[in-house]
Amino acid sequence: MSSFLILEPSPAIQKDWISLIWFPESYDIFYAWEKNVDIDSVVGVVVRSWITVNRELIDTYPSLRYICRVGVWIENIDTIYAKEKNIAVINTPGANANAVADLVLLWILYLQRKMYICERSYEKRFSYLGHELSTQTVWILWFWNIGKKIYQRLLAFGVTNFLIYDPYLSSDIVSSFQYCNKKNTIEEVFGKSNIISLHLPLTPETRLLIHADVLSLTKNDLCLINTSRWWIVDEDALYSFLCKNRDASAFFDVREEEPNLWPKISQLLTLPNFLLTPHIWAMTHEANKNMHIFTCPS
Image 1 (cartoon, rainbow, N blue to C red):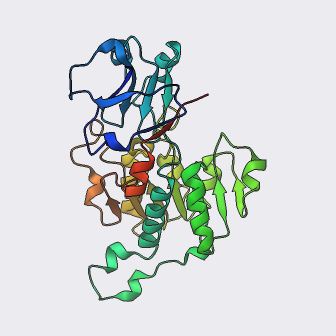
Image 2 (cartoon, rainbow, N blue to C red; image 1 turned 120 degrees about the vertical axis):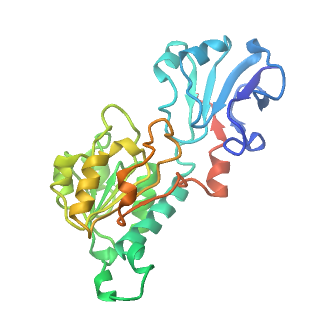
């Protein structure tokens, strides 16, 4: 019987949650270490973020037809080589969008009201003045599944000014969403944004997209949310910006999934206006189950 091989352990991947929809046949699904593997029977592998699916791994399984990624981003998969070998790469976009949007909304509220300062003391409460969301201009980068969920939540809080920078969406599509305006360069957006929320993959084009030159254009009380990847933002530039602008703040939730790129001691961690969580954006029961549902491409 053809089989799907799970290459990462529980709880990262839960075998009982895996659902294969519209696949041409039934498959035996098991962890790679559960039993002796008949290499020729493996038609699919399932990974999350710990395993790099490179050329060597792909060539290990001569009958491989599917690579399933529990989650959204697929930078840990050699998609070019997979395409050359006619292997489908299947991820689960949108499965964790609600979970991420909830977390982003939580942190926007937390940072805008300076809870990271005022929770430590009840003195000098007038130094904790923040902003009401309805007065803020929000930049969502990019406007995909998660970005649209955040947009919907912020609408409910009365936000009426959204700036969208997304090279893959036309102005007509963006303008079809109420209060949304498409901008063609990030420089246009930075000087006007109070809140920036990053939702994009790490690629050669997006690496260090947020750098010193664009940060120099922004407001001195900027609220930056990064639930994408660490190296989309220039660490040194952000550190310098946050040091000079104590009313600005940043929240990152990207540490856990990039252990090989993570600096052992980040200078950002010394700042009170920089907050970090260990990649918990999709850590809801609902999102984790949804990310195990794979639909076979037609």
